[in-house]
Image (tube, rainbow, N blue to C red; front, side, top):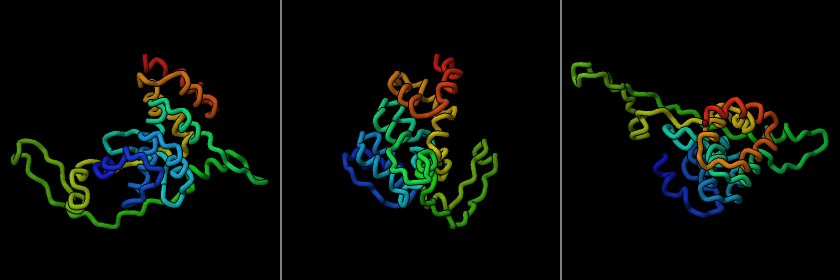
Length: 204
């Protein structure tokens, strides 16, 4: 999946690529970050039918989401568009509730119904060390990804994710992070500064 994503991640197109599956389509958020495409990110943000989460990780072994990349690359305009979106508020509605609905009330990823086919285990004596069991169905479907975990999605509520340890530590560890990015998050995520201060020693 990631290999196919790499083929078009840098295409400067405003169109949402709805290619294979919901998992694949979710990666348009990261594509929008890499191309700095506000129009595409807007489509990703408001398309609740094809995008199941705004916070999918780029791959199983690179555990970063569009939010992580936006913060570490100091793309504050796009970052603020996600954490403080413009929403039309009707009577008897609140901004926080509508924003949370955009984050969480989305299409779901279809479950996998294919049963695994265990190929068995090799004795330790065969290679001199233990060998992981390989599931045949996953191997046929995913190639090398059969040996690693599936692409996962982080906390779907963006504000909760921004307040999490991983996001803050990645933000502070990046040599590219600027004061403007920290201020943008501080302005739009209540309580962020209280979580940030204890983590500053992590980056020093």
